[in-house]
Length: 387
Ligand SMILES: [Zn+2]
Image (cartoon, rainbow, N blue to C red; front, side):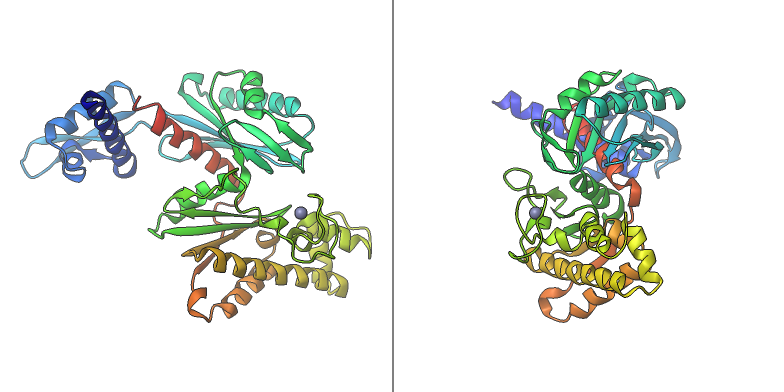
């Protein structure tokens, strides 16, 4: 038992030192020892093993008090590359992220999702194409993260249900691992949960304890991140607020119930309403009609704004977060709509239990791919380096 404990502490120390170099490098051995409260000898030993595994590199020197030159260490940017993928209904986004979180390349490919096998084959080809284009050798790639809409089981790597793609009980991780031209582990998760990882790690990092990310787009969903951890619930189902019933006599929803929240906000339902007046194919077309002053379009958007504000307030009352970040086509594609939502939410912030910071997403179209790549990198740091 004692040996195991020592082994565990050793791994944990390597992890702490590497994370410190990732966050604060270039940094000297003496400063590392001071920051993580370990002896200079221990810090030097860990640094030597990290240099040997090619995860960090020496860069320049510093004179720290003693007058002796001390080398500075920083992460090796291209030592670890993680890939993030977003599958949307008519496009696939792919990004390559380096060890310090910078995007080396990001591309968007037009693709109408059909079968899981075809989607996997297409993604595999695109990844290979981008590797060639950016001269990235396969041994630097530590994994591929994929964010997609639907109910996902990340542990089993299965898509339980994606109504948008018509996929049910699909072992997508296995399919993609088979279809890729490189050998790399695949991680899959719900797109909004991937985006929440990016919002939390890349943008927020402001020491706030809890954040709710709410998405208003082709569906309605939310993710609670508390102390850096995503709350998932028993089946990774947590936050599927789009299917909370707001009117049992309402319209039919794709889930089989009537009057779900998303039927008042999600694009496809707004388009159905608008089509009763004139042939309309997208949210953008409804917004154009609203800007022209068409009364029916104004009313459809007004109602969607009202339900969006109610949703944000409900989320605040359920979770009591420090921050709410709103995202999705409905809040991101039009300034006027976004500002009205923010103003109405602020008007409601009068009671003691309604105080929170409200932001619009800053990761935008890079959110899902960045989060998916970060998930891969975090997994690598937790499981590979220290084992
Ligand atoms: Zn529903």
